[in-house]
Image (cartoon, rainbow, N blue to C red; front, side, top):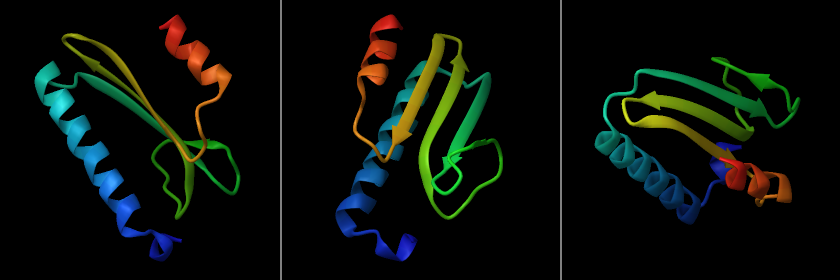
Amino acid sequence: MIENINNETLENIRIMVVNSLNFFASEGKIIKHTITFNDVNSNSPTTGDYSKVVSCGDADFLTPNGLWDLKVSINKPSSKDTLQILMY
């Protein structure tokens, strides 16, 4: 699957990674984290196991300044996603 990624997608991933690194550099050391990925084929969460294709991911980070929840998905945000952001 990775051979099908175009330059625009790669650039978007690079920007996302750089922005995330800059954000956490400003928030202080990560004290604890949990990262979960969903395999596109099984759609079941995994922690630590990687597959060739991931449909979405969720990461929680604890820093001295707060608890941060990062999400990525191949899908557009749903009303459930919007509600979760509002509740936070």
